[in-house]
Length: 584
Image 1: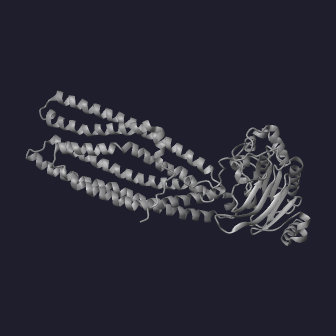
Image 2: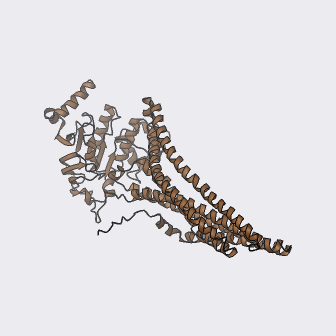
């Protein structure tokens, strides 16, 4: 007989409670005291009716009325304190969870980020954490209150009248069956609702981020229809959830009210024959009402806990995904004085995404310090995949990448990337100022270093025109700059601090040829960095020391511009088509 494999969860919401032990203890404690105050109040009310009012004993009535008032005041105080503890705890663990999720996601390599969309990560960090907060708050408020209320009311009801209490024996299984059936039907709807919410959020995000493209192609109605369909599917799911949740409470109250009618009927008979007093019957009905209210609260908790479980599983899926790009336990340091500083070697390197077809096949290349390497090929040929192996955004499937004479896997990942200036295909700027954005590679960079990088990147001329210069604000995504300006600013950001390796991943596509030429000349004459230029234009890489021509992952040829024009048909075809188009 094989043992069932137990999957250990990485994300356990209960582990976040350890930092708030006193609040976790005090919250249920105060709620238990609140429940006790509710349990004793009907008993004293029965004494007022059966003794004080019956005997017209006003001092007795005043005495127990004050006791009931005191009990209610204390119950209110305990309720406020318990609510305060539960709220502080739930909000605090929500903050801690969001911090951990954000930190964990930021540790992902590109491989892990490819598995999760931005929308689903956002929903898990916001909506799913909220459901766990809500569940935690409900548990802390009711984990002691409901049992105390049910058990206390049941004990007091038995104390008041044992025979009438038999009605509880009949009603309890019916109520529990209702809760079980509703919850069984609700859980799959909750799971499906999360998926539909992700889809609706994804369409919303795509539409807002690509609003200019949508308008350029007059696709507003198409996008509206797409969103409406997704939103309608979400609505239908939530209506089904709401229907099931809505009928739960009325069904419970229906059964409870029928039971109360039975209590009143049989209790009236007992009063007529003198076995039960009027005060005891009133107290019994109050206790029955308290038990029914507790059961309704219990049903709500089951719903909340079901959502909490689903949300915890979704977050666990995210948190259990480990970063495939890790630093070694004993990394070697990068020697900036080494004669090989900036040297890059690809040795029999192949690479594929998620074990699919190789997009880089058996690449062998040696790049000496200070060399400029051009990489050109068709769309999807694997150009960016090659340069992404250098800073270990991905690891080679086969073969080895060496930097400064050592396998890149032997370096600390953060230290490795600190020596590499990277300009991605899509220029990304962050809200703040120009100075803050250009200090990303080197937080302590001086204004002189920033200005030097701006001049090399051909961005100084337009930045100096701003009255606030380096303090000029950058809107979210750099929307207050043109495409060419954003590209030049992202290039300048990569150049700050004079990195040993510079990667320009098709990052000059928005630049005119004159600016592109000036940029490449400035990099070659001002910096000693090893430079990789991924480009669609032969004119952008024609002065490179080596040019790699790649097609569908295969390295067709490696050589200089003139050599490739003579012997590489693809390179010649690209060059001639571009020069003919440009009238050269």
